[in-house]
Length: 354
Image (cartoon, rainbow, N blue to C red; front, side, top):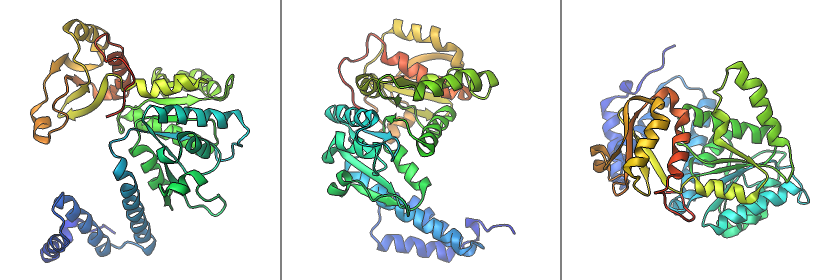
């Protein structure tokens, strides 16, 4: 049976929704609020099952609670730490997670975790209560949120893994994965998929092991020996990750990603990279020599803010590089960003994400 579309909603109902929005005092993004309400009415008009409606209702409720939790910290850069809930406090991995969280907290970052025991608790302890945010999952066999995030009320509990994953990824500007089981690997590979397909903006990702550990090098060997020869991934797909057993290197990789690179935006076919420092003409020529093969046409050019960016007041004060990037190679943007961060004109010192 074909589902009804929004067009099936009677005009008088749409008008009534607009009245509700107005009476609620909503003045910002009214079109989006109206669309959300219309979708809810559409679900009622469709042949949606009660289970479908319960999933939709719970997901929206959880997302609203999570958005409220993160809103006060929107301007503070965050790193998400993934790892096993089963790691014991006397494990070397526990200490690594705690130390890397502490190092990033010292640099002004907040640490986001799944709020459970093991690596999640280690990272929360390292960052401290004032620098920790938790996004927990309600499971019948798991412990309650760890004492660190529970003590500061910076935790939101989720029923569904997909809403939890959204919030663990959406708000962060870097990711550290410590060895773990199916859940940790699932989160890692989803991050890689989002990066590879361009569905998420490039972000620094670290695979952190215990000193001398082989967990992640074993994965890298599998990628090199099986996945790449099979042609199911590109040869450089794993290069976007730093595999290390050094806490210092891990923290520097996360913060260093933002040394010069600020953000990106697509304007039509053009990819705009916003920088902290304007490159020289010679540096732009060098970037074209190295990365010209990733363009669909033309060159990488310096630019002021484009018209659409000015209309949106979107970081208009920053210098830019503009190009017609081959969208089939969008997963390789991280290589260009890495080169931009290594330019001689790039700022020195510890950077923070925009």
